[in-house]
Length: 159
Image 1 (tube, rainbow, N blue to C red):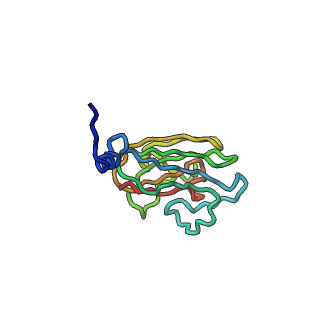
Image 2: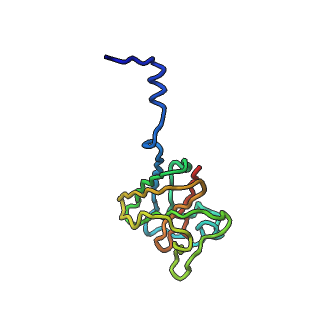
Image 3: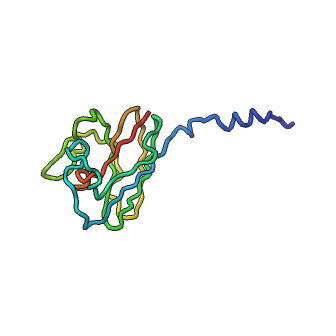
């Protein structure tokens, strides 16, 4: 015995999302202008620098806003010669700089609230990280020495 559904019911069934559809994906690109490019030292989030056009490396996240829940970060190191990584931390106060270890020229990941990372991707390589995120702002950054201070960070919003 066959069951026929009205065409409207089929369209409705196709738009209902279930738990398998609840996850979001953010495509993250880690990029730079080459290992010999001059590096700024004050372009990290709230480090005092304001001219991001001087950044010779960066992080791009698309989309920059997703729904709360499971979020997968698909990360690609688009550099042709430099190792990069992507670390995720919550933004507690957008006006406060991250805890920084000057002697090591990098963020103190533990003090910043490290949630997870795709570590040390060779040029042209990819990696993924899946986290369950609550609503809020999150910072994605590279913590290879000097990279964060050169502007290699971006924010994403989880709604």
